[in-house]
Image (cartoon, rainbow, N blue to C red; front, top):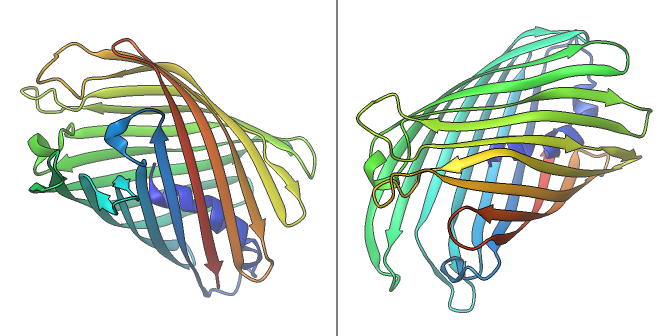
Length: 304
């Protein structure tokens, strides 16, 4: 998942007092943070001890403008021998402009650039080449007040990938969105139900590598307990298929993924916040055996 999206929970948690500053007085607002994530599929030897995913980020906001910088790394790791498999470095920069910003309606537009620097390893762990791929992004986001208790919000991102796509296996285009309704039940509990879609496809009709589709219902139940916020959540698969192995098998492979997770966030009321997250996922495939997936993450953020 996108590092900048994941950091949003930390930013919101630590930045409440910062965001409540007087709207009339324009001033710089900053936050800086780091996160460490691991992902592992039970019994998948290729992952060794699982995926190693450290990230850092920095955001700066002036009035309606926000610039976001992030660095993320991902790849399998074997902690016993301190060796790694194929991995990539992923620096990115985004610039968001808040076109409209009121309590009743918010509209923003984000443009972004991300670079993927792949370092390939063979089965023996020796270097096996590299690839350098870029992703360009444009993303509107919105939040609409329907009633005092109901809101409708979300975002829709459009991506274009370029360079070394044959090496990385990516499609040249992708869309991703998450949008839905939030119901504020009381001051402590709210409920959010979103529709999520991610679809990789090729604008170039001569290519079909890396195409996939994921559709989910994502439900969240944030519970605010003073400085602590607990958010149990679930992802229910609607439709999922992939074609990553298109060179060997041109037929799409169907999947059925469902996830349960818990996000714990704590605000220290001094600009500092932290999050802990764990998720368990059932992954069933039309081809091959079913998997059981674990995700865990810990993050810190400082807003000033």
